Each structure stands twice: as structure tokens, then as C-alpha cells.
Length: 381
Image (cartoon, rainbow, N blue to C red; front, side, top):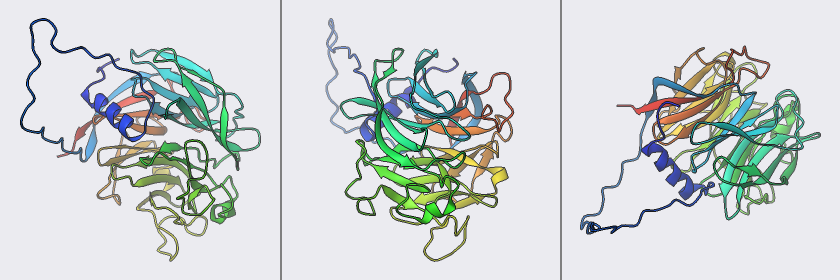
């Protein structure tokens, strides 16, 4: 397996519990004062606060954790040390256990894969009952569901499917599909225009949007448009979604033939599609903070570690590394080394998890594709 899970992962667990309430199990604690030893008296000086992690970069060191995956789409690390993954075309949820073994948790019922549709984003949360949330393509629509997450590492299972939001337009392409919990406890989801571009500008349509739901599937009272799930509009096919430490939401979006986008998302704003693609400088529409020609990006997952964003590129076959303080520039890593990269998720302060997407009919799979890969990171001086 390579390096063991370390202090940075423990910090990630603490952060996940504090901010998003992800699934956790009780941790056994060793009592103090055993035998003749005595606990140390408390220090009179408060501990120095740990400086927030700034910019980081890949060291170039990679660790292949899993091979032989089939169209993996989303990664969801759990504070228990397990990592869950979704497979788009099989509908399976897989568990990478803390000891490095891989098992099938369940096959989610009701999924009708086809084209870019299937089992897409997943996200875990514990608000009393541990749940796994999922975005998937059904017979007539895309929908957001949740399922009780039962068991513990090595024995996780899924309970029955509860539909939180149905009726999201589906198509062979442009289904969106990413899920993320915000620091406000709300669930955010990306949706594509489902090949009908006018839907992106139609506030009554769920397509071409970023949506915001309560964990129970209701419309939050403070959403920008009263009674509507719509958080932002004018999107073509966003598939990357992540919050930074300040609570700012970022999204990565597929363009058409000219520009792919990295967007800083604000509630109620319009990001232009199909009227504007890329940086247009047009009144009433928000420009992206960075754009790429599709041959260099076709972005899917978007991860964060410290003050650095990591954008997974499919057609571009690279990992874009972007400083939050200067989001208009980026550096490409692993160009054409890993093939198509579908998702990127930070774990602690020194690791990034990637899944490749070479078995999705658009790539050229090698003998061990698709893979879950750990990328080691180091602070940038």
C-alpha cells in the first residue's frame, strides 16, 4: 500500500467532522494515570494556533491504490479511514478499506446508464443517521437520493433509496452530477443543460444550474430565488464543485468548442451559457476566473488542499493546479501520464486522491485501468 495514513489524514478527519458531519465511528481512548505514571499538569501557556496551510504542489510522487475500476466517477473519503467510490456504468459503490482491500458495498437500484449518465456524484454525511447521498440517471430523469449507510469499515452497506429531488432533465450528455456539502450544512449539486441550451437561462428549469438543497431535500429558506432550488444559473455542464476554507464555492465547467471554465460561484448569479462562453465581459453575466481550450481541460472533478485548487482534466489528460489567491493562472501536472482524470479530492494536507476515466468509451484503457491514485503534496515556498 505504500505510506500509511498519517497525521494529515487525522487533521482531515477532524475538519470533516467539524464542518460537514461526515460519517464517523467512536474512537477508543486510553485512560490516563495507568500504573504509577501521572498526567502532566496543564500548561499555563495556551498552545500556538497552527498556521493555515497555504499553497501546495504535487511532489511528483504517485501511489496507485486500486486498479481495475470500471468507469469510476466520484470519490468520497470517510473519517473512519475508508474511501467510497461510485462507478458510473455498473451502479456500484465500492469501499477501499483502511487496510487497502477493496470490496463492493452495494449496487444502487434504479440506475439506467447510457452515454454520460449513470451513477455519478456521491457524498457522505451524518446528521444522526449516517447517509450516502447520490446523483444518478434513472429511466426518465436525473435525481438526487440518499441511502442509510450501515455498518463500519469493512462491512458498510446501503439501505433503501429515498428520492430527495427528481425531475432533473437527462440526456445522453450534459448531465452534470457532482454533489458537495457546504460549510452551511446544505447540499449543492451541479446539473447540465441536457443538450437543450435554453434551459440554462430558464429559472423554472432544474437543468444548467447549481442547486442548493437541505439535507432532507427541501428548498432552503435563504436560497436566492424564493421557493426554488436554483443557486446559480447559466451553466452548460458543470462537474466540479468545492468549497474553500472561507466558504467560497468554486465550480469547473465544460464549455462547448471554445472555452472551459473555472468559476467563483455567488448566489443568484448568471454565468452566461449559452449567451456567453468563457470570458465575455458582458453586462449581467459573470465571467470565469480562468478559461482553457477544451483540448487542454474538459474539466470534471475539482478538489482543494490548503489554498490550492486541483482541477481534473479529461480530454486534457492533466491535473491543473491553481492558487486561490491568483485563480487566473494555473500549472499543469502529469500531462498525458495518467490519461483522462475524472475526480480529484484532497485528503489532509499532503495527499490528493484521483480517479482516472480511461474505461468510459472516450479513453484508451491500459491493462490496469481504471485506477485510484494518491498524489503526494508539499507546501510551496
